Image 1: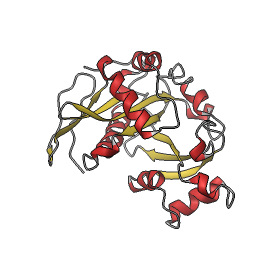
Image 2: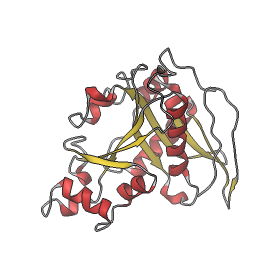
Image 3: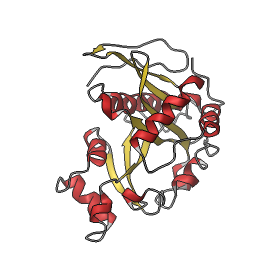
Length: 241
């Protein structure tokens, strides 16, 4: 995996290293001119699902600019991640993707919340070896720590479940993936990054036929979280450079 440069709220690069054969990978906040590339990444990663609309992408950047990230490798967007802050107690295991993300517009972003919710993460699978997915997840964790949030939560697609739907429940499928009995790279990647499996959200995204509408819930707890201190983002978020 390649090393990364992380850029948040106008801060300069923290660290960088060349990715063999591809140039330097860096994670930065998304810009308006990234919209077409982000939509292309989504279409390639999820061919059966609609990508973000331009209005959704613009709304996300207005709501929480620091949470909209791009993995840039030699001037090419090889990955992207979208996140927002929520009060997770309002959602738990009963929410749908539309409800928690405000139908993708991030109108549910709550700067006083304690949870960074990863709404989407996509990479260019034709550019394997850049480390884009890992870099984006690590950047989200850094953001979580800097804002003094309690956790990062992701609802991961289960694209291999459709083949097992008649044989087992989505909960059994996810458990067997976590135990190593079934291969599902999407879920195994989350556990490999230190996320803890929490359960399955049924009906999370009904249009996701490959996952039969389900998603596996994972959490990463911020070891530096201080409950006595308010979230650093309690006021209007600063814009990224």
